[in-house]
Length: 171
Image (cartoon, rainbow, N blue to C red; front, side):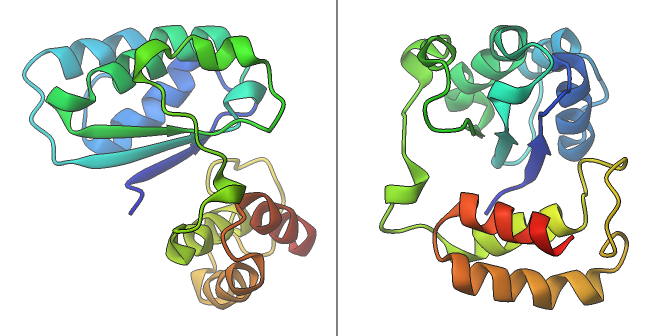
């Protein structure tokens, strides 16, 4: 199950790092501070961090080089697994920045995707949890968002893209 999901569209590496730090209980906030904390004596629980729309970040290259690749390459020690989402056809150079720590998976072709993750993604999209400037009737109304997200996920199956487009249309 995903521990923290961050939508990186328009965000800097430091903004993404601050959200990850908050969710994981790391007191540092900027990208360099989070990496220093993880390289230090951080003893958090095994976690899965999803950073979506990496290709839409304010500076995708800096996001990967300064934050995501160091987090991914430290996974054995930190027990933090990183999922980085980009659109199909995004600049292949971005994926190469992850180096040996990258395993590239096309989510739309996965046979074993967890519908629960798609449902959670749809709920967070409906509530615009990562984007407080987006107007949505679901904000702070989980009792309304949860059944809608469940229905979206049931129809989207394993496709995060279909879930996102459906949730955005419903907002």
